[in-house]
Image (cartoon, rainbow, N blue to C red; front, side, top):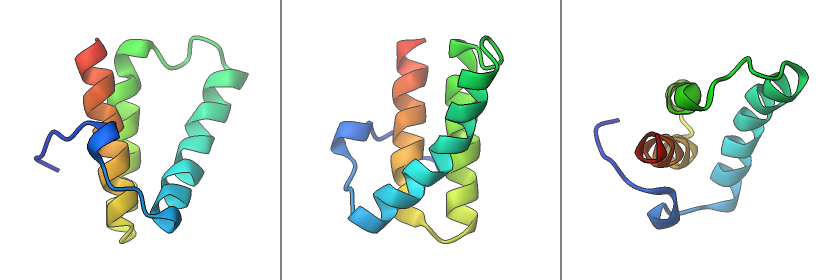
Amino acid sequence: MAHRERFENTPREPEQLEAALDHLFRPLCFAVENPGAIAPAEMDDWLRMAAAERDRQGDYGAARMLDALAVQADDND
């Protein structure tokens, strides 16, 4: 995923948005159940891992959305 697209500029098809949110739910639960386990500076890495998994599963729109969130998280670092 070489592009650096920000989330607000990413197309969001409903089924791809659902796939992205479904994948985000796991690390979100982990972070809530284990405060401090995911440092804010590591959020972009977590999002990129999620994007790679969605891409591997053929959910390319979800992968683009997650990658765009990673870019935004990295920019906010």
